[in-house]
Amino acid sequence: MSSTGNPDYRDAGLEFPAGFVFGSATAAYQVEGAAHEGGRGASIWDTFSRVPGAVVNGDTGDIADDHYHRLEEDLDLMAELGLQSYRFSISWPRIQPTGRGAANAEGIDFYSRLIDGLISRGITPTVTLYHWDLPQALEDEGGWTNRDTATAFAEYARIVGHAFGDRVAMWTTLNEPWCAAYLGYGSGVHAPGRQDPVAALRAVHHLNLAHGLALTALRETVTNSPEFSVTLNVHALRPSGPTGPEAVRRLDALGNRAFTGPMLNGEYPADLLEDTAAITDWAFVLPGDLAAIHQPIDLLGVNYYSTSLVRMPEDTDAAYDRAGATWPGSEHVEQVPQAGPFTAMGWNIEPSGLQELLELLAERHPGLPMMITENGAAFDDVPDDDGQIHDDARTDYLRRHITAVHRAMDAGVDLRGYFVWSLLDNFEWALGYTKRFGIVYVDYNTLERTPKDSARWFAELCRTKRLPD
Ligand code: IFM
Image (cartoon, rainbow, N blue to C red):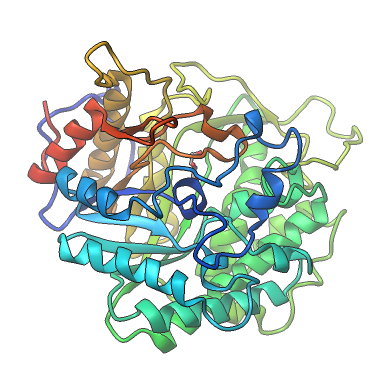
């Protein structure tokens, strides 16, 4: 398979198969609000967002989009847009306030109403168990550096499997464990804000273990016939110059194969273990762990936003300060500036990277269907004089990336769906409310929702399964 064809990626009229799912995604902490209601316990993001300087403007998810109280309105909005599926995450501390023990009935009731509300509107529920809001009580015991967190996660999976396992169409164990491990425990730019390279690698392993144990718990509890998946932000890495391939290999090992290796092949890649040997011997991988992690999945969820261009530095013997490292053991790999255009995140807009990535994954994991579980763009949207949001740049971004998806399918990639990130403008983690990813604009003073032009464009795509003109 190869990435050939019109590099412009601005097609129109492309037809998608009838069974291809178009939907939109959110995550609990980013949209729900009601942080201190309904019996919800504190999560690491409640704590981290209160650390001075951790989040832009001191923003928190206390109110967010107030989705918790505006559930019916938001469900109606999804129906108006014609979404075929809604991908949301369950807040673990809303189900188990301290991460252990009996289920909180109010939390179960909230998600039950959400799931029923989707089904009654003809929208299938795609549920993520973990999108970064670890119960603070578990972090106090070491969080993802502690293997007990993985077993606690399996118990949580069992509770939600019992509660919702008659109605959920697709379960996703983790969202982007790379971020949870490396940004949470390595660079510290995400909750819980730790800066310890070994902690980051321990977190990688315990997240992988949590994935496997949760899949087993779900399979033992659900009563319908759902699909099981995990969502990874697989890094689309490109080499720069002669040292580029080595830099790609290193970041691919840490960022991609550290997860796909144990999850899909039942082993950690040998080169990952070698690259990190100076900082850990991976003794936290216990006998039986790899078999527990290596559970069958029906679909791989792929989140894609942009590419990275990388190379090795001239002086590879230099000593590096590992505190605050996003890439433990490969801190020295250089990220080379890339050509624009860029989104408001400063991320390059490169749809060909999505096609390349999908083709690479299809080669690496033949027979495993994939879904784009997130793709989208932040822009500095401002309502026009008419009160509408004419976000042509976002529509253009979506068109190009959905064109890339179609081209990957033409090249033989088995892709089952596409979820735009995000349904609503929301809390963009350490960047607070400064970045708007939604296809629906949220006025943070009134919490009023206004579909942007891109939402109308996407609604037409959902309705016709044809890329609009
Ligand atoms: O907002 C996030 C989301 O929570 C996870 N994937 C990337 C998005 C944009 O940064």
